[in-house]
Length: 311
Image (cartoon, rainbow, N blue to C red; front, side):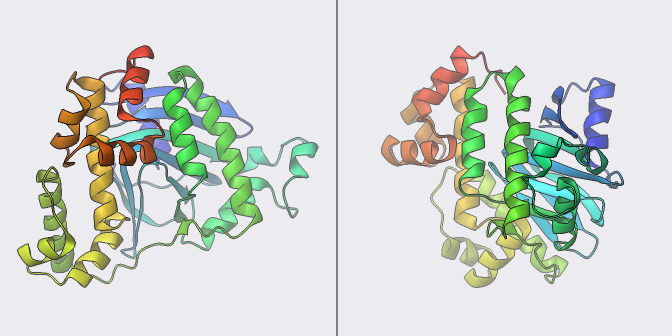
């Protein structure tokens, strides 16, 4: 599904998006992509005997299944989709996505060298094992490894663009091994779609209000009162629609906005901290470093030294 989208953008020489690659390693081909501002993805199917992986660096990915279930992945998280998934649509929340897409060929993984195959439990090939795991999650799941994801995110920020794809492929094989050889607590199940469209629309209004006023202080009780919702309902429905708690989602949006301002402006760190809703640099520095594994000043310096594009 996403593979066809990436290849179409690459073939058409899309100006709204940016594609780097492909990079290949033992049955997996990857592209680094910036699809910010690109058109919504039309419904399609994953190629037979393939698994798709989408690692999010910035933005948020959302897969909606035919039964109304949703799976979301944010920065540092991976979305896995197999040909068993019955997808209704695939969307980029707020029109923003920067990350790496990988297409995994199950047949090619059967030809791994014998010494590598011995690392995997069972007789099935690595990709067959991954596909089997995905079938138990309706063909689609988000992986939120608390160590793996942030580590990859931080390393990608510090690598030259031409080396990111190869590094990601090595780390992806590592994650697939972990997934297939233990029961991961970090796998996020599909969210049930039992909210009617009136309830979902009300929470989407809250979401839109949050992003329009993200620089202001706000709490769940205040948002619930403003939109005449129960705080408990707001928290539950928001998490099912957007894949993260209200506070976490808002904080990530603020920090992503801050990262963009650090790349594209010469404003002081204090000015940017206040612009995205923080009262000072201390709390802002701590939150930024927790997500990007470097301080705002270090991030800006790294972007300038590595000629990171202003986007």
